[in-house]
Image 1 (tube, rainbow, N blue to C red):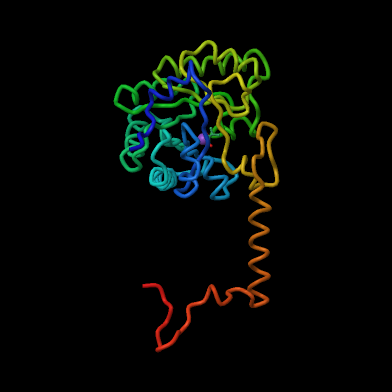
Image 2: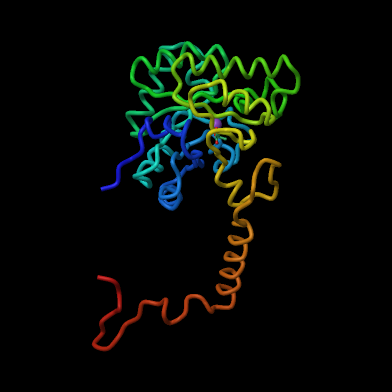
Length: 275
Ligand code: KIV
Ligand code: NA
């Protein structure tokens, strides 16, 4: 009997082995990753890497819930966190709780993640007090892309570094059980990780963090373009292209399907159809 990891296992990583985290959006891929990962994040990056949006701003509650349900069906061991999409929590603590509780009820996930500017401390505290574990997300916050003017690493000057540090402190004080740190230089990630007593999970934020996360499609090599902070562990783009090219060739040459792949009438007028 496998036991799904709990928030305690994630918190314990502050003093233990680094947390292994990846994004997941569908059941079969989640099932493949589940044995190796501590945490699977149903990231709102789904809007970009699965649905073809140019940012995460257009991602809806319905998308997050559908993908969250799929990942829960495909996994039984990893701690599953679902992102709260842009526009689902910023207005008020009540709005945040209505949407976070809906995500938890309809998907069965263990926690939600909020891109947490300092203002969001209010929402985080409200959710945690009411039974929703929250992961914060500081530094580069992709939902703020239209304010920043692009996907830009954060902490370029002292004021910006202090702001990111403040976001991290505010999330911890409000009761977040962990935070994602995205797109900051090593010295800042190191300082945040040493200051906070909750685990930090880095993406483009150096090896100083208490864990690492990547967008699965990036590390599997499904896109042409790889950001500096991504290591490509696979080359799915060429694997898929190679397979589809071979399939197209076989269909056009009528070599697929062959005998072995064909249902036929056999002796006595019986077909070899599956029962
Ligand atoms: O949406 C996402 O994939 C994320 C990770 C990059 C942390 O928020
Ligand atoms: Na996200």
